[in-house]
Image 1 (cartoon, rainbow, N blue to C red):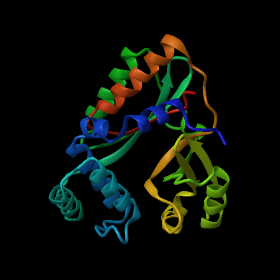
Image 2 (cartoon, one colour):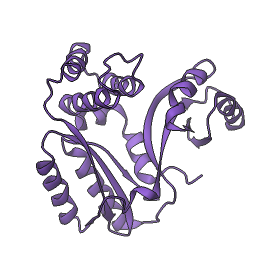
Image 3 (cartoon, rainbow, N blue to C red):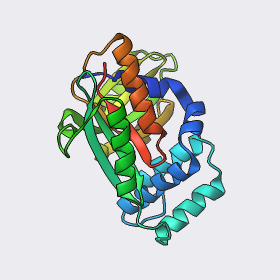
Image 4 (cartoon, rainbow, N blue to C red):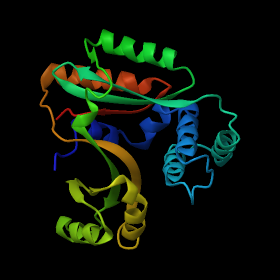
Length: 238
C-alpha cells in the first residue's frame, strides 16, 4: 500500500468550501458531460455509475438540481459541443510525477494553458505514458469510523469486496477495482457511513519533497486545478 500522497491529503482537507470556489458550475457541467459520454450516452444515474459519481460531486458543491438536470439533458441530446477528455502528464520540480485530467471543447487552448503553468513552474511537460504507469486507477470510498477500529473496517471492507484500506484520521479510505466500485459502495453502505466515492489515480510510489520546494510544488498543482477545463490533478508527492 503506497499511501495517500500529500497532494491528495491537501485536497481532502480543503473540503467542500474550496470545491465551491475552485470548481465552477461550468467545470462540474463538463464532468457530467464526460460521464454521460463515457456511459454510452446514458443519462440515468441508476444505469450510469460514472454519471452518479459526477452528480454526487456536483451536489456536494451545492450545484442546483435544475443546473444538474440541464447539464444531463444537454449531454444526452449532444448539445454540449465536442467536449472531450484529455490527459496530460509531466514532472514537477523534485521529480514529482503529475497527471492532469481535463474536459474541453478546445484542446489546443487547454494544452496551451496547461503548458504555460508547467513552464512558469519549471516543470517538465511529458509525453503520453511517461507518468501514467506510476499510478493505479482505482475506486476510492471514504467512510466514517463511527467508533469502529481500523481492523473492524478492514474486515467489513474485505467482505464487501474491497482490496485495501487506509486510515486517515477520523475517516478511512477504502480501495476497490474500478469495475467493482458501485457494488462495494452499495455493500459498505449497509454497515458504514459512506461519505463519498470516486474513481481516482493512486500513486504506486511516493516522492519525498520538503521545505520550500514542497510549497512550490503544491502551488503549481493548485494553479493547474484552478484552470476551468481541468477536472482533476494527481501527484505522487509524499
